[in-house]
Image 1 (cartoon, helix red, strand yellow):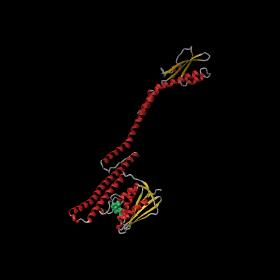
Image 2 (cartoon, protein in one colour):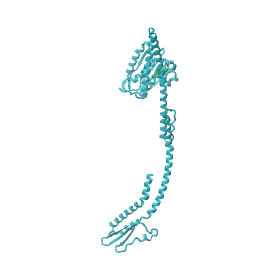
Image 3 (tube, rainbow, N blue to C red):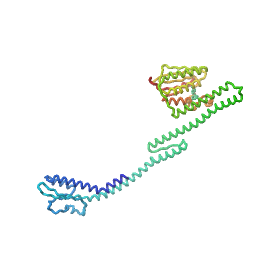
Image 4 (spheres, helix red, strand yellow):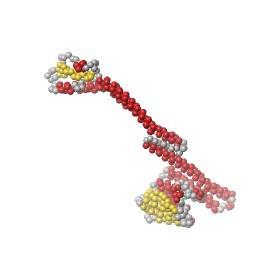
Length: 413
Ligand code: ADP
């Protein structure tokens, strides 16, 4: 509108004034030209050239002045609007010439009406164009955004199954996809929260109930306390401590609040001492753990976290070993990656369960829940390795054992 208004202002309202100004300037230029070439031989030709644009009446000074003939004779311009300037020029030989410059500006009025009509047509076309454009914008941008907004409001009420349908421009489709992913993630978090509450409360309740009943028994029959009873209480308390520790670890790993304390260290050396310490602890139960490593490998990682992941794998190997109580830790270095494999000869895992064992709270054979661990061990391993951009996996055969492995990029020393 502003653009059209300016166009209208200059093309119609100020047009006459501007045209006059231009004509006056032209006339000034013509006068200056005549003044400088008054003694030239070809003055006539110069005047002829100038007459292309304006009328010039040249007379000796004595002659009676009158407006140019052809203008007066033209019937169409009975009272032509014009600008006139009369000027005397003195030649070198003393002759004085009077010249009247006469520029008609009347046709401007006709031009103004033409322009006004054109302006009116342009305004109509522009308004039509603006309306069509507004309608297109509304249907392609405003409406889809409005729909997304409605869905977002539904999402805010906690209905995570809401679908965002963004149509129209690519950016709106992308926004819609992002919102759908966000809704999906929120829904996952919600499921996880429920799962966590259910699992943790179940896992806490079982040992607590056991501890309570044993303590009650010991309270009622203080003379009959046996070492099995106290051992059960100790075991259950240990289980509780481990569960709480695992839940807290996983929570801080997943929330992203945990800062990794990375440094370059000797992985082989670090794991070897862990193996030795664990070997000492479990040798009374008949376990032997051996470590095979050809060379010392260095990695850039958080030593405490990597050791924790390794411990989880090692303890699982011990936990799920059957009669064959030998566990092998094998280190191999290839293509700049160090791979650590924890090999047991235990029960192995059924292939159907494999995709789920890395999930939180997943325990193969859930009925054995009170016997086995917390179901968080492998998810902690997974999270730690993901934070280190490491790879991990398992190769297993039912009845033959499992090989859990992880690999990290080798660091230069
Ligand atoms: P848990 O605390 O129950 O051991 P994990 O997350 O460490 O939880 O392991 C998940 C499941 O994977 C376990 O319940 C177990 O059935 C299976 N699993 C893990 N390690 C082994 C292993 N070395 N041999 C056989 N099964 C294993």
